[in-house]
Amino acid sequence: MKLSIIICTSNRPESLKKVLQSLDRQVFKNFETLIMRESPLVKARDLGWRQAKGEVVAWIDDDVILDKDWAKNLVEIFEENKDVGGVSGPTIVPENLLINRLVFWWYGQKSLLAKLWVKLVLDNQPFKVGKITKIGWWSPGSNFKSCLKIEGLQEVDYLEACNMSLRRDLVKKAGGFDLNYKGTSEWCELDLAMRIKHLGYRLVWSREVKVEHQVSRSGVFIKRKNWPERIKNYLKFRKKWLLKRQ
Image (cartoon, rainbow, N blue to C red; front, side, top):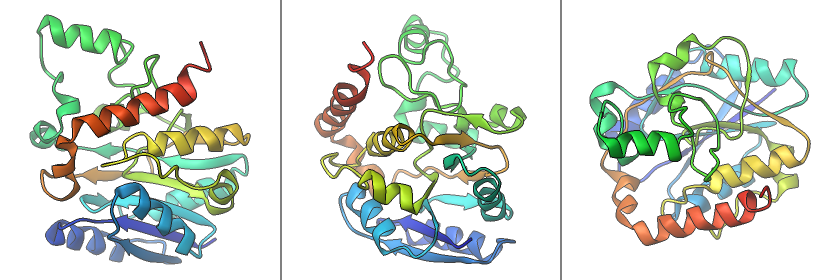
């Protein structure tokens, strides 16, 4: 089985260099690497799989470092589980870098607001992996070291955007990414994951498919300040998928 690895990057040459070095150290060697610089991010993600030649396509960010067995382990999961359409795994953020993402603001906080956030937004399961919550948010458990204690394959609702692998034929059948997600394109990955599940395939998470996410405040992060677009993306996803459940 051949693997196509897509790296979407934006003005982060030093971190990109580290990603490529971790690819050189992979035990599994039957892969190609595609570096995409298009904007917006959803366009880069979509063009990547369309140019890919592998049976499995993996998207990683330009600020991750891959475990040396990352590629080997994810390919083995696909080969051994024909009903699995997508694979993800830990995206461990070093604790000193959690401050670089606003979505982790609640971590370590004891305020009433933080407690309400965990209860109402994260369904009181802040360290759950791969869950889409009742209001359409995503659980951040894969970013914390505690997830490394989870054994076996865990069926999940979505795949981590910086560590996401799918069977290429299913991505094609699902129509690829929805290009109507703008800016940093949050929820475009969740949207595609939902469509893969609707084709009748499982999405799974394994601690053996591990990356370290050295989250940066440069590159695409700068566009995260565009809150109107981010809110529109969230509302689009919520309307498209969650309101159907209610």
